[in-house]
Length: 222
Length: 342
Image (cartoon, rainbow over all chains, first blue to last red; front, side, top):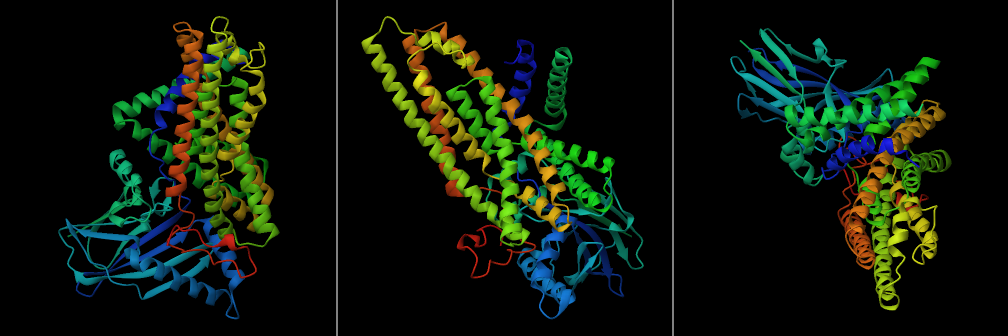
């Protein structure tokens, strides 16, 4: 038996939790990627590509390595990692490499990745790739912003950070331009998360749940 | 001791209330709480991953304490979000009643079962049959589907029982309209061990336990694919027992959250029963309870069917890595990749 004096506090806790029940089931991420982003400029100082490095979390790295070691043929781990790279590339290609890029209000077109590599370092799998713009763009004077996210939010993409503070090299501009960079934490709007959660997992990226939890990288060059 | 427990209970209630008020006033509503819970859960997940990875490097009492503390917190917050298991459990308890002790037993059993299923799945599939961890994670989608179907069956069964109960109470009203015990023993319902010998209670006792068991299994059989990943990773780190410890402690955290909710459901029902019982005739009261049970059963049935048809479970693999390789021809056919991801 529960003594009567517990009734009221427990009832209060329960009422609050009961109030939460009808909320949509928002799937929590099951793994994460630590992201490093480098803006690649051409010799005229125009943005031509995004070089990204994705570091899979320790658990996912472990189970993927398990898979590679089990399946590697004569080529050894190196060949298996290469094979993994091309699989990841093929999986990401129809999804725009999880990347959205904007200059001011204009959405910039992104091409296909031909240049990529997968490596294993300290037990973490790292996917490094060069994502070209469809055409080089002058970015001075306007705000360049990007988001990298898994629309299903099964995997969360976050900039490399120490605690809540993004590392300095999580976002860099490679070139001569003088730029200010910053990484904005996600500020999910409950209403829109609710809308997104109502939609099916395989709906378009525009409605994906992951976008609401994505960090935004911003670069302003002069 | 009881005094401190009371204080702790009030403290928890106070903290939650403060959170509620803070969210409502500053963060724009209830959904914000859901997001806040999710953010905490995410942080716990990350900390847990790091703790297990760290423990395999340098195990020490301190790292163990950290790991178990994090696991417990993860369990609490993982369960604090909405989920179909809790919806089924609260609906069942609100509409069918039950002693507090049983509500506690139900929620603890369901939470622990969830952890046990994850552990058994890994022991059986990964250790026993040599599956890859990612393939075992894929199998969660199938277990989940089984859980949804069981929820629907449970709902159907509860409906049948409610209809039988309604018929019985109608029969009682006809034969012995004056001397109904019903009112009496429904009061005693709260303390089910204190049986008054009413004819509606005794035959139902065993059946009550059977439905309770079915509820536990229907909601507890569904493991979190995160737990399977954790156990698989712990295995690969050569530290399976660390993973088992983490999952068991996680289940205890889940049990804490779920039993609070379960107790609340029982109190809410008890309160409503007392209010109603004092106002209407015992016959009308029995009818009302019967209708309540039927409504609850229907709600659970509808939820089960809805979940079975849409399969709204969380995706069991990421589009990034694609599906895990299918099991070879010698493997069981049910190991085909789940319909999620891409």
